[in-house]
Image 1 (spheres, helix red, strand yellow):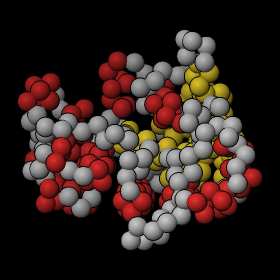
Image 2: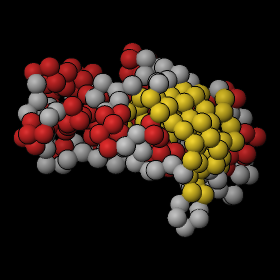
Image 3: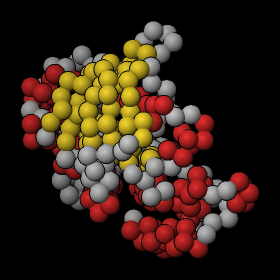
Image 4: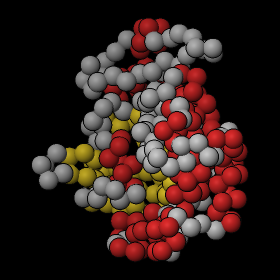
Length: 272
């Protein structure tokens, strides 16, 4: 379980990115984090794994207070958090298998880490995860030879190689076509169900968030303005998150087809 208590972030410039954020994510729950650009979604995710240092408040993963950790204790805690990035963050010249195995680097002692020496159990797990994400035949291919959807699948397998207790996902479909986006979101949802993993997914596509999330949290100007079930995300709620817009027209304008019905993407600048 993840719990945030009164989390805030103010940058040295005085810009306040997050204000008094408090919520819990129980095991197995997939949370879609939505909001306009600049709302604080990426900052929130990066505060949880301490890539961005919070200014105040507390973050708990199980019984561990992440905000109190430093040095080796923080590095150990980060092993418990799987991160899936928008831009995949793969090492292009390495193979698919090597990229997946890099998820175990936090568990490998010094010289083994430097030489990329992994145990038989680590390799067996990597093969099983590649099969899970549909890339078992691509294990020896270089990462730079993959499509965008395949790269994101490698990123998912790498995160799961850590055996994490929490998944943080930053805009996993931003660079993908509608059909692949649905496949990636379905894959994330499935692995969270199977492993009872809590997950927070920062996502601009509201329709995808509604379809594949158990819960939606809406941010605006660094504050939570909605926290509820996907079916409760009405046009009035969307207006409170993104600003005034003709949502029916947005859905109509952005509907289409790509082998299967296209899900509309709603990414409206704040205040529009």
